[in-house]
Length: 468
Image (cartoon, rainbow, N blue to C red; front, side, top):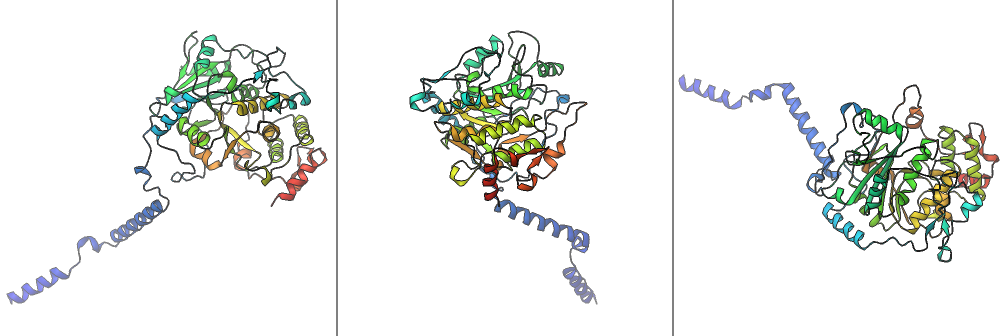
């Protein structure tokens, strides 16, 4: 009987399942976990994101931010649909880039022999030239290089002598931004390498209104002959009466005349104040300008490829109030050679850029383009996308441009909304929530503006003929 009982006990012991398998909920949880891990691992490997941790370049260092918590420099970031795992642009190792940039800076010389600027004094900062006068400067071939070019500064853009000396000493790479009318926050760049601040200057221009707002957060002081620094940015206060009543037009000066404010810099990066860089500017210059062998790198517009599409959107979303002046601008360009984009304009892939981020190699072509563009902005409005293609296609010498994809822009920067002013309404949904429509014959009337009756009729007919 004992042996029988022992055999029965042994049989029971060997055939009974483990206790943790008796719980159906636990079994289901383990199955779910293993399935989820399997698919996550598969997705990571297929997108090469799984290995990205092991192949990252030299780790960058982020600058210390001294912003108080109530300043809110990271509020209201605009989301993107870009995957954080994949990258549409590749960067070389940081130390390789530093060496190559140093070699370039050592051997680089801005060839501007015979390239002079018109220095007359005028009631206007840019001179207010007629269309015929402005267009006469477009052709700067070898036989016309001794001509003086109008390029702003015919009226004072007053900064302290202390700041001006520092601007002239910036002889390598400069990153420039501007805030007027307290329209944005100062945002610190991320991902700066260990030697970047030895090669790159960071300058941000502000007016009195913005300066006083920064002072209220204890970010700057009123002390004279003191370098005003907020993180990596040197704050340059524009003193006295500003050249223009419109804050956006004042911002155009450091945006497009950076080569005049920093005459000894060899490369520049312009960032709208709503933009926060997430990649070291040396990596950006190397990847988007140097390796591409171009004079300028700029993002394509996310929606439009024709200048007229941007003009209609400007009217539709009320980005510029003087519709009559805007219509006159487009008619002037159409009558003087502006055509819609076609494959014949390649290697330029579009006529409409996103000018929030501009990278330049300072030289004859890039500097001439900047001067010509500024003259058009003063003549009409600060909407720089409207004059971009007209000048690019008409000027000589031709400029080499890398118009990179929108996904690249979203990979290298974070975009934030502008400051929301109390007592003012901003139609944010019109800019981000509404679907952007391509221009077609059914929506050519915007705010009472009949584009089909303008001098751009042939432009529109050609544009529609090529529309899908």
